[in-house]
Length: 147
Ligand code: HEC
Image (cartoon, rainbow, N blue to C red):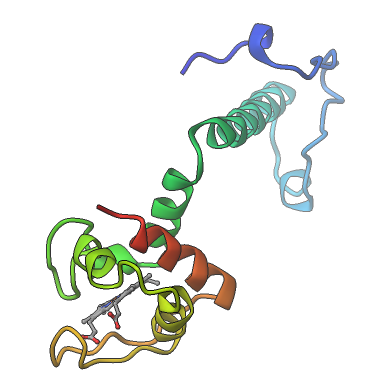
């Protein structure tokens, strides 16, 4: 992805050297770095901010799907689950098929994702997962939308 000032909504402040330090942290100031390093550091961080901004905009356009899959990865769900095949746990597609038309499924499964449990798909238990109730709901909604 090419990022330049032309596709960035924020006007770039002029960057005087060597005083430029909008991102300066205590950690930086304790290091002995030259003004040119300083500038590079600031430049890279500004770029990172732009990428983050464009990423946020991109999510708005491409919808929830990617966000929830990324959350599933971040929360380690994908080390035991895949969308379309059984790993340690059932394929998310199979979970979605099983609970199709079950109005209470989101709440029930979200509670199970958080607390863990076993016996529905076999004797291998799912351990409790480190998710908030909101995250569990979001993840289960995503799981149940898999086809
Ligand atoms: C250590 C492996 C492991 C991890 C990590 C894991 N799961 Fe599971 N998951 C399982 C197993 C095993 C089952 C089957 C449990 C059973 O048979 O009741 C399962 C079942 C499920 C089910 C179906 C439950 C049911 O009662 O039908 C959902 C939904 C689910 N997992 C979602 C998640 C989500 C979301 C995460 C991440 C926050 C996650 N899992 C993390 C192993 C795991």
